[in-house]
Amino acid sequence: MTKEANRRFETPGSLAIMLIYLAMFGVFWLLSFVYLGLRWAIG
Amino acid sequence: MAIAEPLPRVVSIDRPETSRTCTVTGLRIYAGAQALTLANAVAAVLALAAGGLFGTLIGLSRAPALEFLGPGTFYAALTGHGVAALVLWPIFFEVAAMVFASSILLNARVWSMKLGWLSFALMTGGSIVLLLTILLGDASVMFTAYPPLVATQWFYIGYLVFAVGALGAIVNFALTIVAARAEGAQEGSLPLITYGVGCAAILALLSILSGLVALIPAWVYANGWTGTLEPIVYRGWFWGLGHTLQYVNVIAMVVAWYGIAAFAFGAGPVNQKFTRFAFVLYLIIAVPVLGHHFLVDPSIGTTTKFVGGTAMGFALGIPSLMHGLAVMGGIEAEMRARGAVTGLFGWLKSLRFGHFATASLTCSLLIFAVGGWSGTVETTLPLNLVNHNTMGVPAHIHSVVVGGTTLAFMGFAYYLVPLLSRRRLWGGRLATVQAYLYGGGLLLMIVAQTWAGALGVPRRTQSIDYGGGTPGGWDASMNLNGVGVAFASTAGVLFIVIMVATLVLGKRTDDPAELAEPAFR
Figure 1 (cartoon, chains in turn yellow, purple):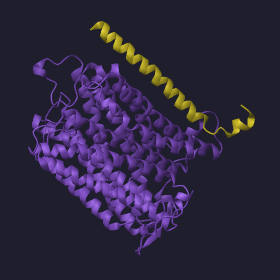
Figure 2 (spheres, helix red, strand yellow; figure 1 turned 180 degrees about the vertical axis):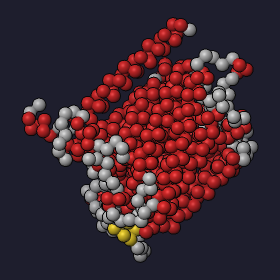
Figure 3 (cartoon, helix red, strand yellow; figure 1 turned 120 degrees about the vertical axis):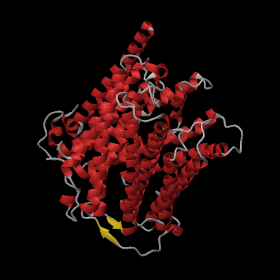
Figure 4 (cartoon, one colour; figure 1 turned 60 degrees about the vertical axis):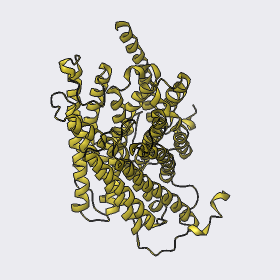
Protein backbone atom coordinates (compact mmCIF):
# COMPACT_ATOMS: atom_id res chain seq x y z
CA MET A 1 0.00 0.00 0.00
CA THR A 2 1.43 3.40 -0.94
CA LYS A 3 1.93 6.15 1.60
CA GLU A 4 -0.87 8.16 -0.04
CA ALA A 5 -3.32 5.22 -0.03
CA ASN A 6 -2.37 4.47 3.57
CA ARG A 7 -3.19 8.06 4.55
CA ARG A 8 -6.62 7.82 2.94
CA PHE A 9 -7.49 4.55 4.66
CA GLU A 10 -9.55 6.11 7.42
CA THR A 11 -11.13 3.12 9.14
CA PRO A 12 -8.52 0.43 9.93
CA GLY A 13 -9.82 -0.04 13.49
CA SER A 14 -13.41 -0.65 12.38
CA LEU A 15 -12.24 -3.08 9.74
CA ALA A 16 -10.18 -4.94 12.36
CA ILE A 17 -13.21 -5.15 14.70
CA MET A 18 -15.36 -6.49 11.85
CA LEU A 19 -12.75 -9.10 10.89
CA ILE A 20 -12.45 -10.26 14.51
CA TYR A 21 -16.26 -10.52 14.63
CA LEU A 22 -16.40 -12.55 11.42
CA ALA A 23 -13.60 -14.86 12.60
CA MET A 24 -15.43 -15.47 15.89
CA PHE A 25 -18.65 -16.08 13.97
CA GLY A 26 -16.91 -18.67 11.78
CA VAL A 27 -15.48 -20.47 14.80
CA PHE A 28 -18.80 -20.52 16.67
CA TRP A 29 -20.69 -21.66 13.58
CA LEU A 30 -18.32 -24.58 13.15
CA LEU A 31 -18.50 -25.33 16.89
CA SER A 32 -22.29 -25.59 16.51
CA PHE A 33 -21.79 -28.53 14.18
CA VAL A 34 -19.32 -30.12 16.61
CA TYR A 35 -21.98 -29.73 19.33
CA LEU A 36 -24.59 -31.23 17.01
CA GLY A 37 -22.31 -34.17 16.23
CA LEU A 38 -21.64 -34.78 19.92
CA ARG A 39 -25.34 -34.67 20.71
CA TRP A 40 -26.03 -37.12 17.92
CA ALA A 41 -23.18 -39.40 19.03
CA ILE A 42 -24.27 -39.37 22.69
CA GLY A 43 -27.98 -39.70 21.85
CA MET B 1 -31.74 13.17 -13.32
CA ALA B 2 -34.79 13.97 -15.41
CA ILE B 3 -36.98 11.95 -13.11
CA ALA B 4 -36.55 14.59 -10.40
CA GLU B 5 -37.52 17.60 -12.52
CA PRO B 6 -40.98 17.66 -14.13
CA LEU B 7 -42.98 16.63 -11.09
CA PRO B 8 -46.74 17.15 -11.01
CA ARG B 9 -47.82 20.34 -9.28
CA VAL B 10 -50.95 18.63 -7.97
CA VAL B 11 -48.98 17.39 -4.98
CA SER B 12 -47.91 20.87 -3.94
CA ILE B 13 -49.05 22.04 -0.52
CA ASP B 14 -51.24 25.13 -0.41
CA ARG B 15 -51.41 25.69 3.33
CA PRO B 16 -49.93 28.34 5.63
CA GLU B 17 -48.12 26.84 8.60
CA THR B 18 -45.89 28.23 11.33
CA SER B 19 -42.34 27.02 11.51
CA ARG B 20 -39.10 27.49 13.43
CA THR B 21 -35.44 26.80 12.75
CA CYS B 22 -33.81 24.09 14.87
CA THR B 23 -30.80 25.55 16.67
CA VAL B 24 -28.96 22.22 16.54
CA THR B 25 -29.52 21.03 12.98
CA GLY B 26 -30.39 24.31 11.26
CA LEU B 27 -33.43 22.55 9.77
CA ARG B 28 -36.79 24.23 9.36
CA ILE B 29 -39.37 22.51 11.54
CA TYR B 30 -43.06 23.04 10.73
CA ALA B 31 -45.50 22.91 13.61
CA GLY B 32 -47.61 20.15 12.02
CA ALA B 33 -44.65 17.88 11.33
CA GLN B 34 -43.36 18.39 14.87
CA ALA B 35 -46.73 17.57 16.46
CA LEU B 36 -47.28 14.50 14.27
CA THR B 37 -43.78 13.15 14.91
CA LEU B 38 -44.13 13.63 18.65
CA ALA B 39 -47.61 12.07 18.75
CA ASN B 40 -46.39 8.94 16.97
CA ALA B 41 -43.26 8.81 19.15
CA VAL B 42 -45.37 9.04 22.32
CA ALA B 43 -47.69 6.28 21.03
CA ALA B 44 -44.60 4.19 20.27
CA VAL B 45 -43.32 4.63 23.83
CA LEU B 46 -46.75 3.69 25.23
CA ALA B 47 -46.82 0.57 23.03
CA LEU B 48 -43.32 -0.29 24.24
CA ALA B 49 -44.51 0.14 27.82
CA ALA B 50 -47.40 -2.27 27.18
CA GLY B 51 -45.13 -4.78 25.40
CA GLY B 52 -42.54 -4.48 28.15
CA LEU B 53 -45.13 -5.00 30.87
CA PHE B 54 -46.46 -8.15 29.19
CA GLY B 55 -42.86 -9.29 28.58
CA THR B 56 -41.92 -8.77 32.21
CA LEU B 57 -44.88 -10.86 33.35
CA ILE B 58 -44.15 -13.79 31.06
CA GLY B 59 -40.37 -13.56 31.50
CA LEU B 60 -40.59 -13.66 35.30
CA SER B 61 -43.34 -16.26 35.29
CA ARG B 62 -41.24 -18.57 33.14
CA ALA B 63 -38.68 -18.72 35.95
CA PRO B 64 -39.63 -21.98 37.72
CA ALA B 65 -38.82 -20.31 41.06
CA LEU B 66 -41.68 -17.83 40.46
CA GLU B 67 -44.19 -19.27 37.92
CA PHE B 68 -47.09 -17.11 39.08
CA LEU B 69 -49.25 -16.92 35.92
CA GLY B 70 -51.89 -19.52 35.18
CA PRO B 71 -52.32 -20.76 31.59
CA GLY B 72 -55.12 -18.29 30.72
CA THR B 73 -53.19 -15.21 31.85
CA PHE B 74 -49.86 -16.48 30.52
CA TYR B 75 -51.03 -16.98 26.94
CA ALA B 76 -52.94 -13.70 26.97
CA ALA B 77 -49.78 -11.91 28.17
CA LEU B 78 -47.69 -13.75 25.57
CA THR B 79 -50.06 -12.55 22.83
CA GLY B 80 -49.95 -9.01 24.17
CA HIS B 81 -46.15 -9.06 24.34
CA GLY B 82 -45.82 -10.13 20.70
CA VAL B 83 -48.45 -7.75 19.35
CA ALA B 84 -47.34 -4.67 21.32
CA ALA B 85 -43.59 -5.20 21.11
CA LEU B 86 -43.26 -6.68 17.61
CA VAL B 87 -45.98 -4.77 15.73
CA LEU B 88 -47.31 -1.68 17.53
CA TRP B 89 -44.09 -0.23 19.01
CA PRO B 90 -41.92 -0.51 15.88
CA ILE B 91 -44.61 0.68 13.45
CA PHE B 92 -45.52 3.73 15.54
CA PHE B 93 -41.79 4.51 15.79
CA GLU B 94 -41.36 3.95 12.05
CA VAL B 95 -44.23 6.35 11.33
CA ALA B 96 -42.62 8.95 13.61
CA ALA B 97 -39.38 8.40 11.67
CA MET B 98 -41.25 8.70 8.35
CA VAL B 99 -42.77 12.06 9.29
CA PHE B 100 -39.40 13.29 10.60
CA ALA B 101 -37.44 12.07 7.57
CA SER B 102 -39.88 13.27 4.89
CA SER B 103 -40.71 16.69 6.29
CA ILE B 104 -38.27 17.94 8.95
CA LEU B 105 -35.14 16.55 7.27
CA LEU B 106 -36.28 17.97 3.91
CA ASN B 107 -37.26 21.42 5.27
CA ALA B 108 -40.79 20.70 4.09
CA ARG B 109 -44.34 20.48 5.40
CA VAL B 110 -46.26 17.22 5.74
CA TRP B 111 -48.26 16.70 2.52
CA SER B 112 -51.59 16.27 4.31
CA MET B 113 -52.01 16.88 8.03
CA LYS B 114 -55.56 15.49 7.80
CA LEU B 115 -54.26 12.21 6.40
CA GLY B 116 -51.48 12.23 9.00
CA TRP B 117 -53.89 12.60 11.91
CA LEU B 118 -56.42 10.20 10.36
CA SER B 119 -53.69 7.55 10.05
CA PHE B 120 -52.62 8.20 13.63
CA ALA B 121 -56.23 7.90 14.86
CA LEU B 122 -56.77 4.63 12.97
CA MET B 123 -53.50 3.16 14.26
CA THR B 124 -54.29 4.24 17.81
CA GLY B 125 -57.89 2.97 17.61
CA GLY B 126 -56.77 -0.36 16.12
CA SER B 127 -54.13 -0.72 18.85
CA ILE B 128 -56.67 -0.09 21.61
CA VAL B 129 -59.08 -2.66 20.16
CA LEU B 130 -56.26 -5.20 19.80
CA LEU B 131 -55.01 -4.74 23.35
CA LEU B 132 -58.52 -4.77 24.82
CA THR B 133 -59.37 -8.10 23.18
CA ILE B 134 -56.13 -9.53 24.57
CA LEU B 135 -56.70 -8.13 28.07
CA LEU B 136 -60.24 -9.51 28.09
CA GLY B 137 -58.84 -12.96 27.32
CA ASP B 138 -60.66 -13.19 23.98
CA ALA B 139 -57.51 -13.42 21.87
CA SER B 140 -55.00 -15.74 23.54
CA VAL B 141 -53.75 -16.98 20.17
CA MET B 142 -50.22 -15.63 20.52
CA PHE B 143 -48.63 -13.16 18.11
CA THR B 144 -48.84 -15.60 15.19
CA ALA B 145 -52.54 -16.52 15.61
CA TYR B 146 -52.04 -19.69 13.54
CA PRO B 147 -55.33 -21.32 12.49
CA PRO B 148 -57.11 -23.42 13.65
CA LEU B 149 -56.56 -21.18 16.71
CA VAL B 150 -59.09 -18.37 16.48
CA ALA B 151 -59.60 -15.16 18.41
CA THR B 152 -62.63 -12.94 18.70
CA GLN B 153 -63.30 -11.14 15.41
CA TRP B 154 -62.42 -7.82 17.10
CA PHE B 155 -58.81 -8.97 17.32
CA TYR B 156 -58.60 -9.22 13.52
CA ILE B 157 -60.59 -6.02 13.06
CA GLY B 158 -58.15 -4.23 15.37
CA TYR B 159 -55.24 -5.50 13.27
CA LEU B 160 -56.95 -4.45 10.02
CA VAL B 161 -57.80 -0.95 11.26
CA PHE B 162 -54.22 -0.51 12.47
CA ALA B 163 -52.90 -1.70 9.08
CA VAL B 164 -55.12 0.71 7.14
CA GLY B 165 -53.83 3.57 9.32
CA ALA B 166 -50.22 2.52 8.69
CA LEU B 167 -50.89 2.37 4.93
CA GLY B 168 -52.21 5.94 5.09
CA ALA B 169 -49.01 7.03 6.86
CA ILE B 170 -46.89 5.42 4.13
CA VAL B 171 -48.87 7.20 1.39
CA ASN B 172 -48.46 10.50 3.24
CA PHE B 173 -44.72 9.87 3.58
CA ALA B 174 -44.28 9.25 -0.16
CA LEU B 175 -46.38 12.28 -1.19
CA THR B 176 -44.56 14.52 1.30
CA ILE B 177 -41.25 13.71 -0.43
CA VAL B 178 -42.80 14.29 -3.87
CA ALA B 179 -44.28 17.60 -2.69
CA ALA B 180 -40.96 18.68 -1.13
CA ARG B 181 -39.28 18.15 -4.49
CA ALA B 182 -42.10 19.81 -6.43
CA GLU B 183 -41.88 22.90 -4.24
CA GLY B 184 -38.09 23.01 -4.42
CA ALA B 185 -37.68 22.48 -0.66
CA GLN B 186 -35.50 19.48 -1.46
CA GLU B 187 -33.25 18.93 -4.47
CA GLY B 188 -30.72 16.27 -5.47
CA SER B 189 -30.26 12.96 -3.67
CA LEU B 190 -32.36 12.30 -0.61
CA PRO B 191 -30.49 12.56 2.70
CA LEU B 192 -29.22 9.15 3.85
CA ILE B 193 -31.71 8.92 6.72
CA THR B 194 -34.66 9.72 4.45
CA TYR B 195 -33.35 7.18 1.91
CA GLY B 196 -33.13 4.51 4.62
CA VAL B 197 -36.58 5.31 6.02
CA GLY B 198 -37.88 5.15 2.42
CA CYS B 199 -36.50 1.61 2.09
CA ALA B 200 -38.14 0.73 5.41
CA ALA B 201 -41.43 2.20 4.16
CA ILE B 202 -41.30 0.00 1.03
CA LEU B 203 -40.80 -3.09 3.21
CA ALA B 204 -43.56 -1.89 5.56
CA LEU B 205 -45.92 -1.58 2.59
CA LEU B 206 -45.11 -5.14 1.44
CA SER B 207 -45.46 -6.53 4.94
CA ILE B 208 -48.78 -4.81 5.64
CA LEU B 209 -50.25 -5.97 2.32
CA SER B 210 -49.08 -9.53 3.09
CA GLY B 211 -50.64 -9.20 6.55
CA LEU B 212 -53.96 -8.18 5.04
CA VAL B 213 -53.91 -11.29 2.79
CA ALA B 214 -53.33 -13.44 5.90
CA LEU B 215 -55.65 -11.72 8.35
CA ILE B 216 -58.76 -11.05 6.23
CA PRO B 217 -59.31 -14.80 5.55
CA ALA B 218 -58.48 -15.48 9.23
CA TRP B 219 -61.19 -12.99 10.22
CA VAL B 220 -63.65 -14.71 7.85
CA TYR B 221 -62.66 -18.09 9.31
CA ALA B 222 -62.97 -16.82 12.90
CA ASN B 223 -66.56 -15.80 12.17
CA GLY B 224 -67.38 -19.24 10.80
CA TRP B 225 -68.17 -17.80 7.35
CA THR B 226 -65.86 -20.41 5.84
CA GLY B 227 -65.25 -23.89 7.12
CA THR B 228 -61.51 -24.21 6.43
CA LEU B 229 -58.36 -22.15 6.28
CA GLU B 230 -55.20 -23.82 5.00
CA PRO B 231 -52.62 -23.36 7.79
CA ILE B 232 -49.54 -23.38 5.55
CA VAL B 233 -51.04 -20.71 3.26
CA TYR B 234 -51.89 -18.54 6.29
CA ARG B 235 -48.40 -19.02 7.70
CA GLY B 236 -46.74 -18.02 4.43
CA TRP B 237 -48.67 -14.73 4.22
CA PHE B 238 -48.47 -14.15 7.96
CA TRP B 239 -44.67 -14.32 7.91
CA GLY B 240 -44.75 -11.96 4.95
CA LEU B 241 -46.03 -9.59 7.64
CA GLY B 242 -44.27 -10.93 10.71
CA HIS B 243 -40.73 -11.32 9.44
CA THR B 244 -40.65 -8.59 6.80
CA LEU B 245 -41.82 -6.21 9.49
CA GLN B 246 -38.77 -7.11 11.56
CA TYR B 247 -36.64 -5.87 8.68
CA VAL B 248 -38.57 -2.62 8.75
CA ASN B 249 -37.37 -2.49 12.35
CA VAL B 250 -33.82 -3.39 11.38
CA ILE B 251 -33.66 -0.63 8.75
CA ALA B 252 -35.15 1.82 11.23
CA MET B 253 -32.50 0.64 13.72
CA VAL B 254 -29.74 1.31 11.20
CA VAL B 255 -31.23 4.76 10.57
CA ALA B 256 -31.19 5.34 14.34
CA TRP B 257 -27.51 4.27 14.40
CA TYR B 258 -26.67 6.88 11.76
CA GLY B 259 -28.80 9.43 13.61
CA ILE B 260 -26.95 8.82 16.90
CA ALA B 261 -23.59 8.90 15.09
CA ALA B 262 -24.50 12.27 13.54
CA PHE B 263 -25.88 13.91 16.70
CA ALA B 264 -23.41 12.49 19.23
CA PHE B 265 -20.18 12.30 17.22
CA GLY B 266 -20.80 14.63 14.26
CA ALA B 267 -20.10 11.60 12.08
CA GLY B 268 -21.53 10.53 8.74
CA PRO B 269 -20.89 7.38 6.73
CA VAL B 270 -17.49 7.29 5.02
CA ASN B 271 -19.01 6.16 1.72
CA GLN B 272 -22.62 7.06 0.83
CA LYS B 273 -22.86 4.65 -2.14
CA PHE B 274 -21.72 1.72 0.03
CA THR B 275 -24.35 2.57 2.64
CA ARG B 276 -27.20 3.12 0.20
CA PHE B 277 -26.39 -0.13 -1.59
CA ALA B 278 -26.64 -1.92 1.76
CA PHE B 279 -30.15 -0.48 2.25
CA VAL B 280 -31.18 -1.78 -1.20
CA LEU B 281 -29.81 -5.23 -0.32
CA TYR B 282 -32.32 -5.40 2.54
CA LEU B 283 -35.13 -4.79 0.05
CA ILE B 284 -33.90 -7.58 -2.22
CA ILE B 285 -33.27 -10.23 0.44
CA ALA B 286 -35.80 -9.53 3.22
CA VAL B 287 -38.76 -11.19 1.46
CA PRO B 288 -37.25 -14.47 0.09
CA VAL B 289 -35.64 -15.14 3.49
CA LEU B 290 -39.10 -16.12 4.77
CA GLY B 291 -38.19 -19.74 3.98
CA HIS B 292 -36.50 -20.09 7.36
CA HIS B 293 -39.93 -20.08 9.03
CA PHE B 294 -40.71 -23.39 7.29
CA LEU B 295 -37.51 -25.32 7.92
CA VAL B 296 -39.31 -28.12 9.76
CA ASP B 297 -42.50 -28.04 7.69
CA PRO B 298 -43.12 -31.41 6.00
CA SER B 299 -45.03 -29.90 3.06
CA ILE B 300 -42.09 -27.87 1.71
CA GLY B 301 -39.08 -29.34 -0.14
CA THR B 302 -35.49 -29.28 1.11
CA THR B 303 -34.26 -27.15 -1.83
CA THR B 304 -36.75 -24.41 -1.04
CA LYS B 305 -35.80 -24.58 2.62
CA PHE B 306 -32.11 -24.41 1.83
CA VAL B 307 -32.39 -21.49 -0.62
CA GLY B 308 -35.15 -19.51 1.13
CA GLY B 309 -33.99 -20.31 4.63
CA THR B 310 -30.30 -21.06 4.92
CA ALA B 311 -28.76 -19.27 1.89
CA MET B 312 -30.96 -16.18 2.18
CA GLY B 313 -30.50 -16.15 5.95
CA PHE B 314 -26.74 -15.88 5.46
CA ALA B 315 -27.14 -13.31 2.66
CA LEU B 316 -29.27 -11.12 4.89
CA GLY B 317 -26.33 -10.76 7.25
CA ILE B 318 -24.32 -8.95 4.54
CA PRO B 319 -26.16 -5.58 4.55
CA SER B 320 -26.14 -5.55 8.36
CA LEU B 321 -22.37 -6.18 8.35
CA MET B 322 -21.96 -3.35 5.83
CA HIS B 323 -23.96 -0.93 8.00
CA GLY B 324 -22.11 -1.98 11.15
CA LEU B 325 -18.83 -1.24 9.40
CA ALA B 326 -20.14 2.06 7.98
CA VAL B 327 -21.40 3.34 11.36
CA MET B 328 -18.23 2.38 13.25
CA GLY B 329 -16.06 3.54 10.36
CA GLY B 330 -17.84 6.90 10.19
CA ILE B 331 -17.21 7.53 13.89
CA GLU B 332 -13.60 6.32 13.60
CA ALA B 333 -12.93 8.55 10.58
CA GLU B 334 -14.43 11.55 12.40
CA MET B 335 -12.32 10.93 15.51
CA ARG B 336 -9.18 10.50 13.38
CA ALA B 337 -9.99 13.68 11.46
CA ARG B 338 -10.14 15.55 14.77
CA GLY B 339 -6.55 14.41 15.42
CA ALA B 340 -4.61 12.98 18.38
CA VAL B 341 -5.60 9.41 17.57
CA THR B 342 -2.92 6.72 17.47
CA GLY B 343 -2.98 3.01 16.73
CA LEU B 344 -5.76 0.77 15.50
CA PHE B 345 -8.13 1.37 18.40
CA GLY B 346 -6.92 4.73 19.76
CA TRP B 347 -10.09 6.40 18.39
CA LEU B 348 -12.15 4.44 20.93
CA LYS B 349 -10.45 6.44 23.71
CA SER B 350 -11.97 9.62 22.24
CA LEU B 351 -15.49 8.34 22.88
CA ARG B 352 -17.20 9.13 26.19
CA PHE B 353 -18.46 5.75 27.34
CA GLY B 354 -20.19 7.48 30.26
CA HIS B 355 -22.52 9.25 27.81
CA PHE B 356 -25.95 7.80 27.00
CA ALA B 357 -25.35 7.97 23.24
CA THR B 358 -22.15 5.92 23.36
CA ALA B 359 -23.77 3.53 25.86
CA SER B 360 -26.89 2.89 23.76
CA LEU B 361 -25.04 2.71 20.42
CA THR B 362 -22.34 0.36 21.76
CA CYS B 363 -24.83 -1.96 23.46
CA SER B 364 -27.09 -1.93 20.38
CA LEU B 365 -24.22 -2.79 17.99
CA LEU B 366 -22.83 -5.45 20.31
CA ILE B 367 -26.10 -7.24 21.04
CA PHE B 368 -27.23 -7.03 17.41
CA ALA B 369 -23.90 -8.62 16.44
CA VAL B 370 -24.57 -11.47 18.88
CA GLY B 371 -28.01 -11.84 17.25
CA GLY B 372 -26.29 -12.11 13.87
CA TRP B 373 -24.47 -15.20 15.08
CA SER B 374 -27.57 -16.87 16.47
CA GLY B 375 -29.58 -15.87 13.39
CA THR B 376 -27.32 -17.80 11.07
CA VAL B 377 -27.44 -20.76 13.45
CA GLU B 378 -31.25 -20.60 13.42
CA THR B 379 -31.39 -20.50 9.61
CA THR B 380 -28.89 -23.33 9.08
CA LEU B 381 -31.13 -26.29 8.29
CA PRO B 382 -29.49 -29.08 10.38
CA LEU B 383 -28.94 -26.75 13.36
CA ASN B 384 -32.51 -25.46 13.17
CA LEU B 385 -33.86 -29.01 13.38
CA VAL B 386 -32.32 -29.25 16.86
CA ASN B 387 -33.03 -25.72 17.99
CA HIS B 388 -36.54 -25.34 16.55
CA ASN B 389 -39.16 -24.03 18.99
CA THR B 390 -36.69 -24.07 21.87
CA MET B 391 -35.67 -21.04 23.94
CA GLY B 392 -32.86 -20.57 21.39
CA VAL B 393 -35.42 -18.81 19.15
CA PRO B 394 -36.36 -16.05 21.63
CA ALA B 395 -32.62 -15.73 22.37
CA HIS B 396 -32.15 -14.68 18.74
CA ILE B 397 -35.29 -12.53 18.59
CA HIS B 398 -34.37 -10.61 21.75
CA SER B 399 -30.82 -10.04 20.45
CA VAL B 400 -31.91 -8.38 17.23
CA VAL B 401 -35.34 -6.91 17.91
CA VAL B 402 -34.81 -5.79 21.48
CA GLY B 403 -31.07 -5.54 22.01
CA GLY B 404 -30.33 -4.12 18.58
CA THR B 405 -33.47 -2.28 17.59
CA THR B 406 -35.05 -1.09 20.82
CA LEU B 407 -31.76 0.08 22.31
CA ALA B 408 -30.97 2.04 19.13
CA PHE B 409 -34.47 3.59 19.17
CA MET B 410 -33.99 4.52 22.83
CA GLY B 411 -30.63 6.17 22.11
CA PHE B 412 -32.11 8.07 19.15
CA ALA B 413 -35.17 9.09 21.20
CA TYR B 414 -32.80 10.68 23.75
CA TYR B 415 -31.91 13.16 20.98
CA LEU B 416 -35.14 13.31 19.00
CA VAL B 417 -37.51 14.08 21.89
CA PRO B 418 -35.43 16.98 23.34
CA LEU B 419 -34.95 18.48 19.86
CA LEU B 420 -38.67 18.39 19.06
CA SER B 421 -39.93 19.39 22.50
CA ARG B 422 -37.13 21.97 22.94
CA ARG B 423 -36.49 20.62 26.40
CA ARG B 424 -33.18 19.38 27.81
CA LEU B 425 -33.06 15.60 28.36
CA TRP B 426 -34.05 14.96 31.96
CA GLY B 427 -31.54 12.78 33.86
CA GLY B 428 -28.71 12.48 31.34
CA ARG B 429 -26.62 10.29 33.67
CA LEU B 430 -29.65 8.16 34.47
CA ALA B 431 -30.03 7.63 30.71
CA THR B 432 -26.49 6.22 30.61
CA VAL B 433 -27.30 3.86 33.49
CA GLN B 434 -30.55 2.93 31.71
CA ALA B 435 -28.75 1.98 28.48
CA TYR B 436 -26.12 -0.16 30.21
CA LEU B 437 -28.68 -1.78 32.53
CA TYR B 438 -30.94 -2.59 29.58
CA GLY B 439 -28.02 -3.95 27.57
CA GLY B 440 -26.64 -5.96 30.51
CA GLY B 441 -30.05 -7.40 31.43
CA LEU B 442 -30.67 -8.39 27.84
CA LEU B 443 -27.25 -10.04 27.49
CA LEU B 444 -27.98 -12.05 30.63
CA MET B 445 -31.38 -13.03 29.20
CA ILE B 446 -29.84 -14.00 25.87
CA VAL B 447 -27.10 -16.13 27.46
CA ALA B 448 -29.69 -17.87 29.68
CA GLN B 449 -32.10 -18.41 26.78
CA THR B 450 -29.31 -19.78 24.55
CA TRP B 451 -28.29 -22.13 27.36
CA ALA B 452 -31.91 -23.21 27.83
CA GLY B 453 -32.32 -23.66 24.06
CA ALA B 454 -29.25 -25.91 23.91
CA LEU B 455 -30.83 -28.03 26.66
CA GLY B 456 -34.09 -28.22 24.69
CA VAL B 457 -36.33 -26.05 26.90
CA PRO B 458 -39.44 -25.27 24.82
CA ARG B 459 -40.50 -21.69 24.15
CA ARG B 460 -44.11 -20.39 24.34
CA THR B 461 -44.93 -22.74 27.20
CA GLN B 462 -46.49 -21.69 30.47
CA SER B 463 -44.88 -24.40 32.61
CA ILE B 464 -41.96 -26.80 32.20
CA ASP B 465 -42.79 -28.77 35.32
CA TYR B 466 -44.16 -31.84 33.48
CA GLY B 467 -45.39 -33.36 36.72
CA GLY B 468 -41.99 -33.03 38.41
CA GLY B 469 -40.10 -34.61 35.51
CA THR B 470 -38.16 -31.52 34.39
CA PRO B 471 -34.74 -32.49 32.92
CA GLY B 472 -31.61 -31.26 34.74
CA GLY B 473 -30.46 -27.70 34.00
CA TRP B 474 -33.83 -26.50 32.73
CA ASP B 475 -34.78 -24.79 35.98
CA ALA B 476 -31.38 -23.10 36.46
CA SER B 477 -31.27 -21.63 32.95
CA MET B 478 -34.85 -20.33 33.13
CA ASN B 479 -34.32 -18.85 36.61
CA LEU B 480 -31.24 -17.03 35.28
CA ASN B 481 -33.41 -15.78 32.41
CA GLY B 482 -35.79 -14.36 35.02
CA VAL B 483 -32.91 -12.38 36.58
CA GLY B 484 -32.06 -10.88 33.18
CA VAL B 485 -35.73 -10.03 32.62
CA ALA B 486 -35.83 -8.20 35.98
CA PHE B 487 -32.80 -6.04 35.03
CA ALA B 488 -34.07 -5.29 31.52
CA SER B 489 -37.58 -4.48 32.81
CA THR B 490 -36.20 -2.07 35.39
CA ALA B 491 -34.26 -0.34 32.62
CA GLY B 492 -37.40 -0.25 30.44
CA VAL B 493 -39.27 1.55 33.23
CA LEU B 494 -36.35 3.98 33.58
CA PHE B 495 -36.56 4.81 29.86
CA ILE B 496 -40.24 5.68 30.11
CA VAL B 497 -39.61 7.73 33.26
CA ILE B 498 -36.84 9.69 31.50
CA MET B 499 -38.99 10.33 28.43
CA VAL B 500 -42.04 11.46 30.40
CA ALA B 501 -39.91 13.58 32.76
CA THR B 502 -38.20 15.22 29.78
CA LEU B 503 -41.56 16.18 28.25
CA VAL B 504 -42.97 17.43 31.56
CA LEU B 505 -40.00 18.58 33.67
CA GLY B 506 -37.19 19.08 31.13
CA LYS B 507 -35.62 22.55 31.14
CA ARG B 508 -36.90 24.64 28.23
CA THR B 509 -33.96 25.59 26.03
CA ASP B 510 -32.78 26.26 22.49
CA ASP B 511 -29.11 25.99 23.38
CA PRO B 512 -27.52 23.39 21.03
CA ALA B 513 -25.02 22.35 23.72
CA GLU B 514 -27.90 21.43 26.04
CA LEU B 515 -30.16 19.83 23.42
CA ALA B 516 -27.54 17.62 21.75
CA GLU B 517 -24.55 17.17 24.00
CA PRO B 518 -21.59 15.61 22.13
CA ALA B 519 -20.39 12.16 23.23
CA PHE B 520 -16.69 12.54 22.46
CA ARG B 521 -13.71 14.26 24.09
